[in-house]
Length: 569
Image (tube, rainbow, N blue to C red):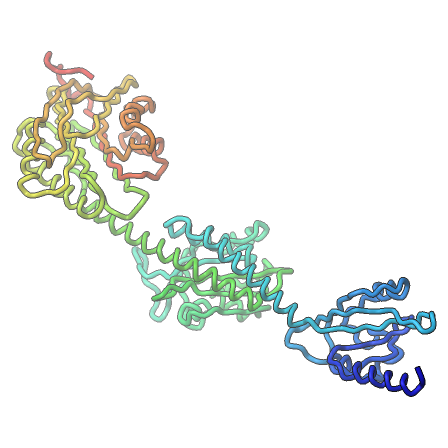
């Protein structure tokens, strides 16, 4: 190859290297620059002359260089890929820049003279991959929130689930509050203010000491200039990274709380609204402390996503709580309190609604004072649930009160109630148990219309189920009820109940009823305590069906000797 041809080829190669958009550098054996092409100068913002004779770290101290890898290339001649990252004098929208480079060893007549590197910037690809990873993490967090927040229809529990999820997933301290719209027993907030009910404050265990000093006040009234109020009014998040005391005061409202949160190390605050389609039901206030970084834009998006999903559950729980309270009041209004029995009879009652829904039901109880110191005890259960069952229950209750005034025997009372229910067109049948307590005779007369047998608890600790002839439910027009009279000693307790007390999935109801005799219930003590003990043992506060209970006891000194024809139980 002659000199002219070599010169042309060198010129051709130089044109390619200097015209390419890929940065190219040549380093000597001491990793000092021998050559940089224009592309690298444009990327770094540094003239070529500044590089010559100097190492990369001397020119661009914020760019990390893999000198150890380049030394290996010089030693064994094997090309290697390396990563360069850092910041240059040319601003970049992605912040720290990233390059992938390949370095080759250069030799002249068998002598190693240095290395040549060719690189390509992959900052945008890295940013894309980081954004994709953040999106995956955000979706995973939202999926986790969907399974951990809103597991019940209890408002307090739902807010606690949200606070406990956000701390520590997105913050070190999280407070959840809901907008209070009803004010019972307390003055309303001043004009122009919104009252927020504090539902849950969650934090890492080491912060609990500081949070205990916040005080027991369950409410805070929000003025228009406060950050939580702005979130509620606008539906947009509020952020204060590395907040001043003034900004922190806007977030927590109470001035004395600023000192407590500062003592805990709080430096950044993010407040997100809890929105629904029609309104904002509350806020989640998040704080970061100590070495935790300030909130990022991705944190805000994630927090908003969690809050949006949680707010639906909170709104549902809030509406359920309000509707449940209203329906319980309606149930109590329909059920009302039973009449006062004669002084010789002590009565206690309980009504426990089903934990499955807010629907009222058809269970009822009653005690009706009759002439000659007698008291009629009533326990009934209309088929089904809902307002129709509750209305039917009220009608059955009225019918039985009217029939009871006639003074007829309990079996005749059931027969007359059955006929009247058919005449007024009640479309739901009801089971019913009547027990007529006669303190002067020391007896009880009972008849059942398809209802479960009452339980007798005696002063000596023994218990037994009263055996009564079966009869059809009232409302069927089948009639044919029978009365049983039995001796009832003073101090004994008679327990009437509906099937919600004993029904269990997969267990025969007759076995469940017989199990009542094994609970070790005592006739001593108050009837109120007896009913509480019974409900605690069998329901633990929750039940699959409505439960109505009535306990009655004949006071000592009011019973006479039973007649020979009476049945003892």
